[in-house]
Image (cartoon, rainbow over all chains, first blue to last red; front, side, top):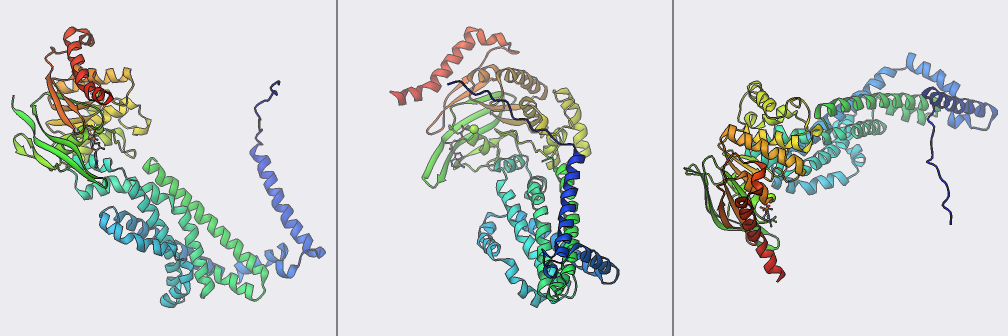
Length: 264
Length: 258
Ligand SMILES: Nc1ncnc2c1ncn2[C@@H]1O[C@H](COP(=O)(O)OP(=O)(O)O)[C@@H](O)[C@H]1O
Ligand SMILES: [Mg+2]
């Protein structure tokens, strides 16, 4: 049988402007289709609202409501939770390097804590820490802490014992091995969870606000939903997404900065 | 010559899940000051284990290690030790890797770097000082690791198969380079290799080791004149030693086969 003649499949890349143009037209089509659909009666405007109404609500939201209070509340809960959880978790994970016995004792507790759906504890956390910012920070911390702990501990376990041998052969103290070997070695693991953690912290903050809060974008969404103000739900969701994107971008930037510093 | 390092009835048995595993039978080795001594033997005969014991990283099951006549069993930081892997820290530049020993000993960074820079340049790492290890070739990495060991400023250095993973050409260059370092720095060198020719070419004395359990089969002095040329390997004296070593190393395998 003759072999079929085949050529390497070639894919031509579009120029960037063409890609952007297509992306923008998809967005416009969806928004226009939504608006027209509601006006023509294909889409139920009561449940789905419509772009023009959302736009009007947006203006009201930013001019008349306490939009900035809410944004700042959610932002602060997320950032504090993220910072506390990530820092404490990373330190906790690193601490397991110091003693194998301590690590072995702690292990089952950590696994237990990992497997609890932390959000199920949220109502309890609210009861303990109150309605304010603290309880939201606590929930965000609970979610991020475990991830950082486990990931950093994975870094500690990946440490090559020969690396430690090298340091000890040079007469190093344990503290020197920790500072000059363990910490820099585990840094890529610490960094790798930053992006996951910012998302988790935001989730924690929002869920906290859903359960009981006086401020925050999560509370806005819940409140608007309960009063059938669907346009306001959309506005709050969009603002929240924007906030998430900004924080995500900031963390990605931080990550690339740290990665450059660690050469990995 | 005074004895620099002495192993007195040093033996090692590892306790594993499968039971007690005798890695090294109690053995005596004396290493004189300033000499280049090789340990040659099949893989698993306990060469690295002995190095770990000499470096104080492993407590021997029996016996003691004497350095300069003092008991140094279980004491770290007395000898320079280059492990089988180069273990360069990827987040440090070559220069900062090389000064690690001095840094750990508490020398200020600036001073350590000033001491290391001219040596890096003299010993073939010029232009690599501020690069990171991952951009270095295998030979360059070994140079950096070896300089790190030398700059730790101990009289004795232990080199565990430093050239084992290099290609033949690079290996020859590195041997010349090591000879130059050895004559410049006047250290006592203990060198592990499984390459008999390399051992004869470099050493003053070879301890040929056997396995199961690890022990010294024979200690062979190499009196070939220095400096040695590559062509030394073709002389009858060299070939005779090589054949003798090969026989020693081969015999257990033959017994097993028979
Ligand atoms: N920590 C350890 N526990 C159990 N067995 C070990 C340990 N370290 C080495 N061994 C065993 O001891 C023997 C000698 O090992 P090693 O000194 O690394 O040999 P070599 O360097 O000569 O190849 C090997 O059989 C190895 O499996
Ligand atoms: Mg070995």
